[in-house]
Length: 51
Image 1: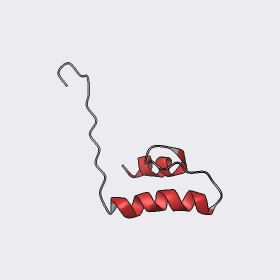
Image 2: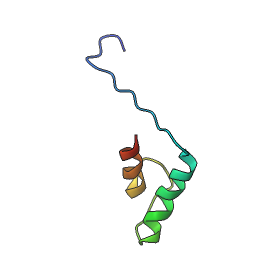
Image 3: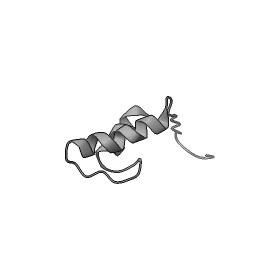
Image 4: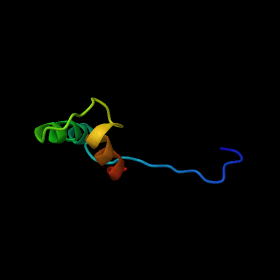
């Protein structure tokens, strides 16, 4: 990090596996395609909002 103008650190708290499951299941419940991963699709957006 030497020479960096700034550094961002983020953490996620809570039951991450429950939240990931919700990120996957809720979009599918409403007919949206959700990839299986924490960074893409509607679930990825919700994951980003939490951290």
